[in-house]
Image 1 (cartoon, rainbow, N blue to C red):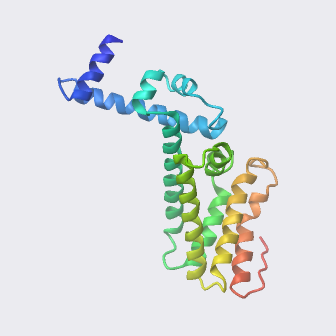
Image 2: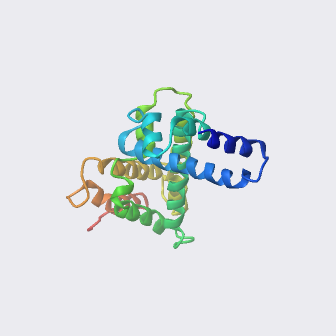
Image 3: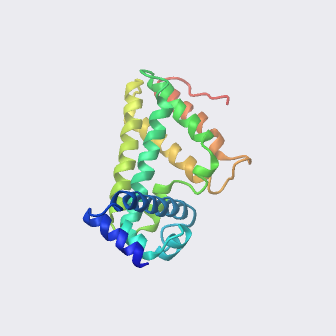
Length: 220
């Protein structure tokens, strides 16, 4: 422990030949703690996972935890920020093959939602789960969640406007409800069974057709 403390001191002050290697080791510990926390938060909930459990599962201790994160609340906020970044990266990758084709982009999003690997969303929407668990209105994580959901809403509304919907705001909001509902349905209906998630793509197409002035029929 004394050797570890000395190395940390060298890293923080910038002195000694061990400074650079220790910085790398410290980063790896932080990453391990963060990855472990993300997995536990999603599977067991924010309130159900404490600092001791995170540190133990990550193979470290509370001292290392608090060197990496000033508090559990800040770790939760970072968990939500990372989830938001990953979701938007997924979104951009899904729509990238269809430039200048907003309708196909929207359809692709819902097709990808249906086909999303079950292990990535079998506990529903991470953002919605955080909203349910955290009661403090000014919590940093809730600020991130609200901004993230607002961005999704605006993106869907823009897709609806770009494809020429009669009422793009209503279509965008309707698509958002389908998308959110499909993630939550995974908590109740597991992969491999007859699930409402399977028709999310069809629902999106029906809504789009209806708002573009067509009959809105969908055969599959």
